[in-house]
Image (cartoon, rainbow, N blue to C red):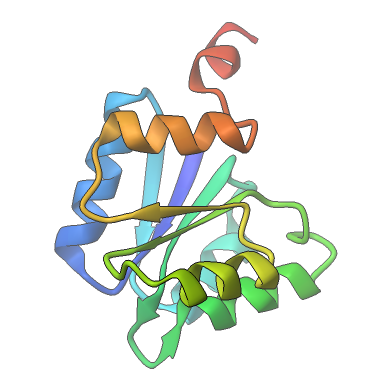
Length: 128
């Protein structure tokens, strides 16, 4: 199982990849919307995308909307990740098609809870 981590902050990408690693999930990390799109075009579909709200030169919401508009990625599970505790932002992300919302700072257990809510179960994938 592989996840795509999209975050403009290297420290946040590494932290999220570390949480995924603890759950037995391999991750690919990119910093921008363009890098994310290029990765999706070239690699196998990830099981989930962890998408930061703020990206260099754009915002995660723009990439989320772009994913939802493309039939290939319309059903791809996307967890929006942010440090902002902002209910209108959460509502906006969910309305745009986010599968779930993860507040930072978080840990592997919090991430696992969100993944299980959206049907991404690392243990089930290992057994399959």
